[in-house]
Length: 161
Image (cartoon, rainbow, N blue to C red; front, side, top):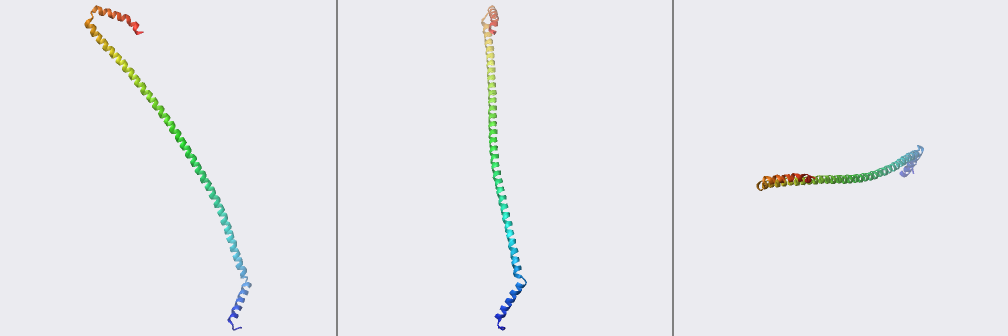
């Protein structure tokens, strides 16, 4: 048995295990594994906490984004409404300005027509008077012309009223 290598391997193995137990190696290994397990567990807990915080932040930012998008829609709608009011007000002012200009133009046209009629009437009267003078100068005697002039002067106050 002392010459058998299996025996010596078994003795070396038993001595090795005894040395490990004597120096408390399994406890050290178990303690190292336990501390490593505790560290991993604390890292996992911290990671879970960070994940929860990240999800909360994500939810907060998503809510803020939705709120900002809604506010942007409201601002856009308000701006479109204001632009419509401004356009309508501008159109009303333009229509009123065009109506005033049209009325002014119509007044000027009416004044021009009145002036033209007055000028035409005055020229017609001048032409008629010139023609009457020529006719009367050539055909009417001086006595008769004086009588007609006196009659016209007498009728003049009645015609002026």
